[in-house]
Image 1 (cartoon, helix red, strand yellow):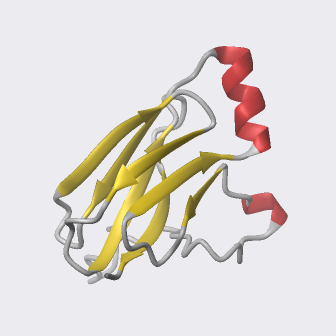
Image 2 (cartoon, one colour):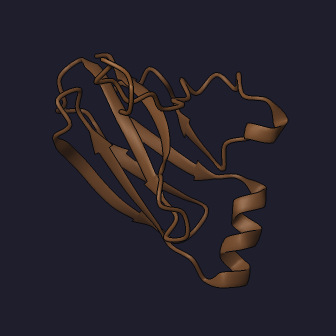
Length: 113
């Protein structure tokens, strides 16, 4: 980073509680959060319309706090379910790639058994 001593990269991460403004509306919902067993990733109405019009599929990736990919799926319909039952308790990051934008939509997910 030019002119700073900072080595941090700041990203906007949703905690799934809908705190975003309407301008920053998330295209996906991930629930329940915290999750114990099955995490559902659901596409919202706006993204569902875009998907139907363009035949998009979404790459869903769940990373642990060390950046290691622990789950991956493709969302082609209205939702996808990820089994997290055997993951350790902790914070994970759900990255959703739409194939159009360079940056994924990111959600913070808490696994708690």
